[in-house]
Length: 393
Image (cartoon, rainbow, N blue to C red; front, side, top):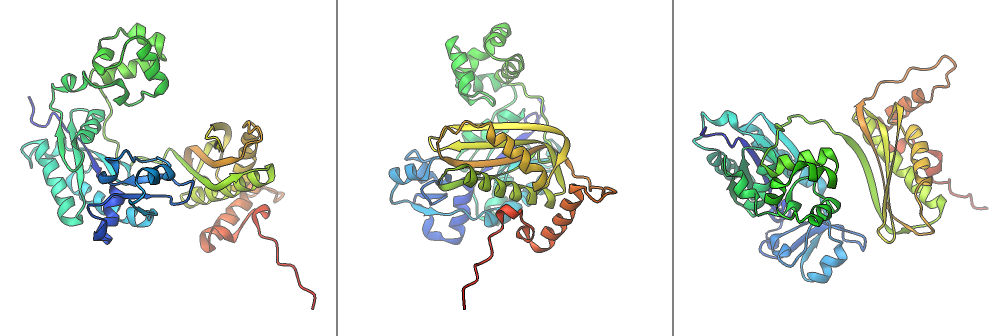
């Protein structure tokens, strides 16, 4: 068998935010550390392995983490610092292969097939890569190697913390068979329950299940997808230079928002922030998606698509407002709002109408001012603070 049949490598930095914080503060080493929003509505962004042993995990409410680990060290996230370190990590990955697919600031897929002339085995590539990250950046990383992408990601999970795991070509089925179907990409709670109803709990059982049965239990496309994964098949290649599929902003509020005026103003502010991101990257999109989470954690998403690309607040806000009207709030307060645009393309400059009434041209002028003087240089009137009242002399 070819030495580099296992040509996909998934590298995942271990507790990345925590380890970056430990570089600046050695007193954090060896103790439970939790990075996340520190307010009552905050969530855990990253937890050290000392903290994870008590059940603390990413996305857990910070109040639950404090209940489990009241004496842990709690830190607010510093995204600029993590992004700067991420660039150094990816510079090392780029030195090993031109085929790097970023998944987030702290993980990526690599196609290492071209290194067969420089290393004896894919395992040796992983050893050298992790050594460079450790020597140059003092950060731990785990690496998984396999013949297909999704298995390389599963292998890196097996490698944690700070290790290497290789699924050799030909050993895919033996690795997969005893595992829960919940570990497969694309299996959510509904699919898991549906499969369990038919006695399918392990990946091995899923691999042996008749495709016709799966098509009756889940949608046809999902049945084909899950059958392929259960049998260790994944046709995807490493995608370099992936373009963003969507741009979004969201906000969890310290206390629930109530009243249509307050909620509407908050949503308008998010639309303005989203517009700033789109205009800075010269992107626009056709689909606007609203996310609303109520005080009882019930979450709604609503989307709408039009024929024209949108990028400016004047274009996004009316669509967002219409979507908000479709959310059944039933008198409850709003805990979280989010707004995003997908179906992205390069935004085209607007042409000024003959009668001077084209709003898009006005948006372009506002975008230039915002780019030069900041997002607050041009605000919707509804967001502008009223001038202070003059006092009588």
